[in-house]
Length: 400
Ligand code: PMP
Image (cartoon, rainbow, N blue to C red; front, side):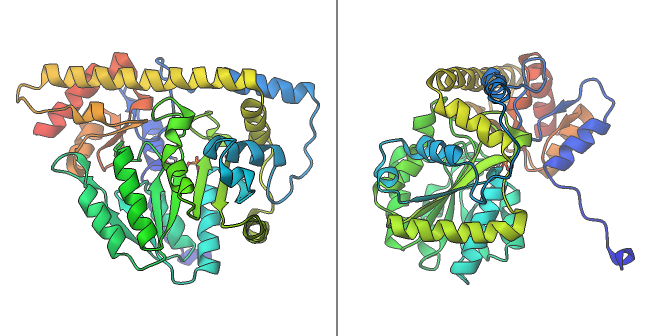
């Protein structure tokens, strides 16, 4: 019976927020979860989201069940936003798009598809990666292994290691790639490196599996941030893409995203979609409508779309400015001459500081900076007023 169940460990990322809430220190700073905060460190609801919600009320929309595959208007715009309206994969109807429970749920649905139709196939995950990737494939009973990604010596990309490991994987493996703004490192391949990655993936008959959780958040441009995915699609490859609107539209709790499977034909796409629906039905039956309508309204209405782009630029700009400020503070305070410029080279919400587990623990225990133990900090949760404090904490933890 239940008596025999042991206590599960806290989640390494969401557990940080729990510890943060429990802390009473006034200097406390939550740099664990990747959620955007204002300069006042408050959660932010985008203006376009409020406008889209007003539209929904005005239209008197109902709360009937969605179909298993989700809201048609959402599925249309989400695939177009990802691939571009004029992409041949869209025109030829080769994409099976199913609305799912944000990025996580979309990854989980894709994992279920792999488990059912590619038994024994392995997923290759970057080392390191977003911590939940391994949980998702473990629970879906999909075998996985890692490919080299981060090079601690350069605090940059281990490109040779990455290519060698993708080459060495069994033919027909799924290669999980972060479309942009790699989490946790903030290090992305260059366009030339993406071409090389596509070469080996193609050579080995692997299937690229993109996780796109930050479209618009890396460069501030939605198109530029989708260029990795589009580069693979342009080669005529089959691929999968999990999308999330948690970060770029700030819809964390609405659980809105999609899984897109690019197939060789419209006919194959229809079959894949039917199987995704068959997998979703016993798992959660059908997805929630609220976030889907928000996205459909924002992406589908040119005025709101343009306003969204401006708000996204504003959010990405604030993160860039605290990134610069943190770098300036570190450089000014650190007498050792250490080169901190890797912080400026990293992109997206996160910075990978290179702090190890015990140094990260010092950040929390002594300085009340709550963060994951891998040395990752979310710059989206940092204000410019707290950059100095953070720089002091990093330097103290680094050298002691
Ligand atoms: N993938 C990556 C790389 C992420 O960073 C995140 C969010 N932290 C997700 C997927 C999923 O987030 P959500 O389920 O909220 O869309």
